[in-house]
Length: 230
Image (cartoon, rainbow, N blue to C red; front, side, top):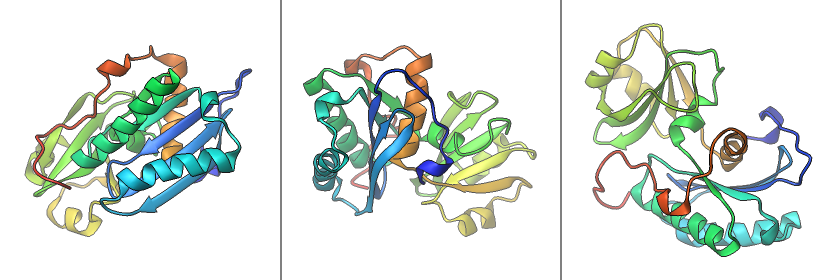
């Protein structure tokens, strides 16, 4: 993902967003200022998020020439995804926001995938690997900010829920070949990615249209019980 394909918003004030994504193997941190990406770090290092997240944030503020106290708010990918990864990202984001007394805007990974396709696409099914042949699923109609249904389903259960004219966007950690081998419905399937810069873009829009949520009320979206380190 890069800033060239992102929708930009214009503000009179100096809006600075710190975006964080740690829900899977990717650790992604981005700085978004006045409607465009300033800097982004992405690294795929399994089980190292707790170390590299803090390193990325410290290094990025220095490289971008931004004082952390100037941050307007933090945008965090809130799940579903890896239990451990989500806890690391959410804990860091909350600590940062408490320390600097700034808002935190959670963005679900269903929203991230949904915003990668044209807003006219409906119905839209966003799928994320949940393990053991099951998929975190968010179903959207015209409103791409809130799924009309979300859950964890097997391929056979998805066959009963997905309409023939629908579009499925699967997160890149899902093997498209494996999925299409067992999913037989005539639908269009698109690959989707996460990145902190996309999280910033969505959160910026949320900050204009939605009420802030108390830090104490914000929690990761798990959808299933913790079943070991992922």
